[in-house]
Image 1 (cartoon, rainbow, N blue to C red):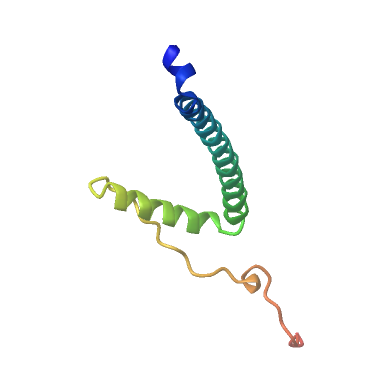
Image 2 (cartoon, rainbow, N blue to C red):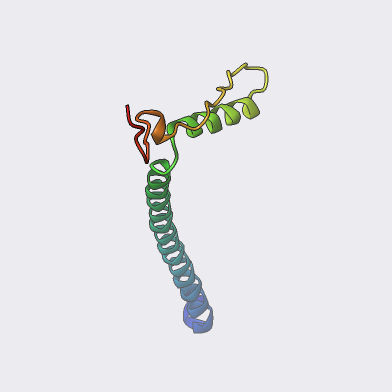
Length: 103
């Protein structure tokens, strides 16, 4: 300890190194906390977007895309491909006539 009294500059360098280590630890912990908060916000936003987009796509189209993804992931697994029907028109249920023919 006699050397520290004889040379106060080395004592100040040791103290500065200790304070630097403490500062770096604090800075990295705050950065990690901020990144975690940002990641949680991104995940929550992505879930909301997925929920919103899932309501915009019909169930048949969603199954078609899911089957295509499953086929691309494991091509050896056979996945039945649904054949889409023609579009269902509103007039198929109740035919609309502009002019009625007399009986």
